[in-house]
Length: 79
Picture 1 (cartoon, one colour):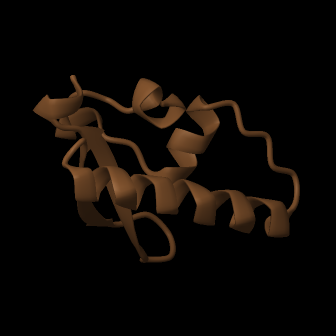
Picture 2 (cartoon, rainbow, N blue to C red):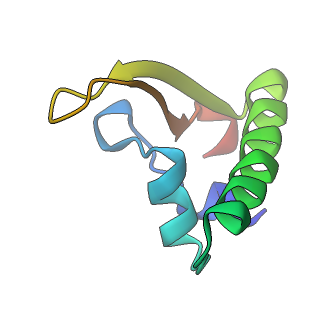
Picture 3 (tube, rainbow, N blue to C red):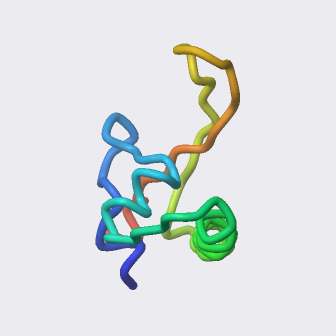
């Protein structure tokens, strides 16, 4: 799976959905295109979390506008 190939092995190096999309080489120029791609990516990540291949945590952006986002990394099962 392409998503697993770009995920880090540890929580310290975990990536957000935007970082995962960039690592996968997704070039999305419009907001609508990004929204569609992000929804598909999140759907795949949720399935991987459900199956135990990926773990996640919620973080809050501290720079600029404060918002919550998820970070993802591989579990021992996926390594």
